[in-house]
Image (cartoon, rainbow, N blue to C red; front, side, top):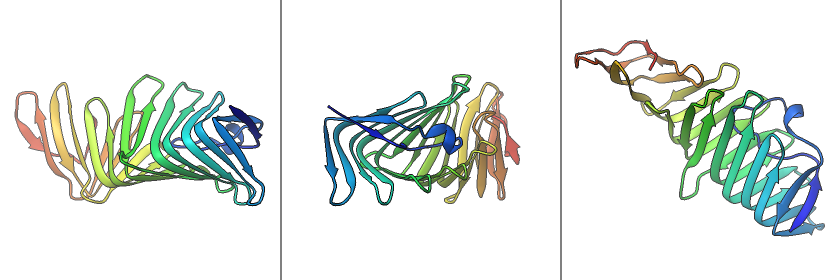
Amino acid sequence: MNKILILVLLLSPVLPLRAAEDFLMGSVVKSDKWKMDRTNDREIFDGNVSFHNPRYTLKADYALYNRPTQTWNMKGSVYMLRRFDDRSLVEMNCDKAVYYETLEEAILERGSLPVRMKYTGPDGRVLKGLADRSFAENKKGLMRFEGAFSLSTDNLDLYSRKGLYNNVDGTFLMSESTPMAVGNREAYDFAISSEKIKFFKDSRDIKFYNRVTGWVKDIDGKARPAPQRTKP
């Protein structure tokens, strides 16, 4: 198994911090095979590719690093784990991923399965997400989700065509294809749709915007009109 020292690595998925905190120098990549293509100035890692440091774990079947463009291309069972100081963590699974070091941007794409996200908060609560494609902008603290986007907790499911995560306020803004939230809690269950839905990942609050329709059912079975906002 080959070990290659590189300067900076690798993806920063959802919930990024400053680049200086995340991209460590002198990290080690492992793989079954490694090839240095000096003609095209690139490195090729093939088979059981892995990267690990205190903040990141990354695995893939194949990875190519293009030095002139400072671009990583990974494919085949791509898995990323990102740990945070507050003991929260984010896991991402996809079929293909591209990371642009200079721009600090990443593109994750589905294969036979969608792009999968799992966020575990400091309190142990889990938030899961699915999408066909996602685009992360580390410098802006944004991550976009496209195509059959959904979020799920233990008592709530949200659906839309597009989603935008903003690290500043820790929210997912869901839009297009009539976003909907369906859930239940001790005293009631509900199904509500609107033009846009904003979901707060830590408090689990929800805000609904424009043309809000649906129902909220009390524990006694009586339904009432959907409110402009609700907290499941």
